Length: 60
Image (tube, rainbow, N blue to C red; front, side, top):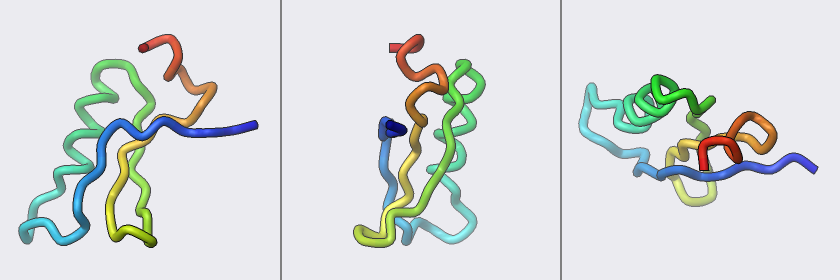
Protein backbone atom coordinates (compact mmCIF):
# COMPACT_ATOMS: atom_id res chain seq x y z
CA UNK A 1 0.00 0.00 0.00
CA UNK A 2 1.38 3.38 -0.90
CA UNK A 3 0.80 6.33 1.34
CA UNK A 4 2.17 9.71 2.13
CA UNK A 5 3.25 11.82 5.04
CA UNK A 6 2.18 15.46 5.00
CA UNK A 7 5.02 17.60 6.30
CA UNK A 8 3.29 20.98 6.02
CA UNK A 9 0.35 22.70 4.32
CA UNK A 10 0.10 26.17 2.79
CA UNK A 11 -2.94 28.14 1.57
CA UNK A 12 -3.22 28.35 -2.19
CA UNK A 13 -3.88 32.10 -2.11
CA UNK A 14 -0.43 33.25 -1.02
CA UNK A 15 1.06 36.64 -1.91
CA UNK A 16 1.79 37.21 -5.60
CA UNK A 17 5.25 35.95 -6.50
CA UNK A 18 5.56 33.93 -3.31
CA UNK A 19 5.96 30.15 -3.41
CA UNK A 20 6.19 29.11 0.28
CA UNK A 21 5.26 25.46 -0.34
CA UNK A 22 7.94 25.10 -3.03
CA UNK A 23 10.51 26.84 -0.83
CA UNK A 24 9.68 24.57 2.11
CA UNK A 25 9.88 21.46 -0.09
CA UNK A 26 13.24 22.56 -1.50
CA UNK A 27 14.63 23.02 2.02
CA UNK A 28 13.48 19.48 2.93
CA UNK A 29 15.10 18.11 -0.26
CA UNK A 30 18.37 19.77 0.77
CA UNK A 31 18.03 17.85 4.06
CA UNK A 32 17.70 14.61 2.09
CA UNK A 33 13.93 14.11 2.14
CA UNK A 34 12.26 13.48 -1.23
CA UNK A 35 9.65 16.17 -0.57
CA UNK A 36 7.19 17.22 -3.25
CA UNK A 37 4.31 19.68 -3.49
CA UNK A 38 0.80 18.52 -4.36
CA UNK A 39 -2.49 20.40 -4.50
CA UNK A 40 -5.37 19.33 -2.30
CA UNK A 41 -8.36 20.61 -4.24
CA UNK A 42 -10.84 19.78 -1.50
CA UNK A 43 -9.17 22.20 0.95
CA UNK A 44 -7.55 24.59 -1.58
CA UNK A 45 -4.16 23.97 0.05
CA UNK A 46 -0.71 23.06 -1.20
CA UNK A 47 0.68 20.09 0.71
CA UNK A 48 4.35 19.26 1.05
CA UNK A 49 4.50 15.48 1.19
CA UNK A 50 6.89 12.54 1.29
CA UNK A 51 5.56 9.34 -0.23
CA UNK A 52 5.86 6.16 1.87
CA UNK A 53 8.83 4.04 0.94
CA UNK A 54 10.78 7.09 -0.30
CA UNK A 55 12.94 7.55 2.78
CA UNK A 56 10.37 9.15 5.06
CA UNK A 57 10.84 6.48 7.73
CA UNK A 58 14.62 6.87 7.68
CA UNK A 59 14.34 10.60 8.35
CA UNK A 60 11.94 10.24 11.28
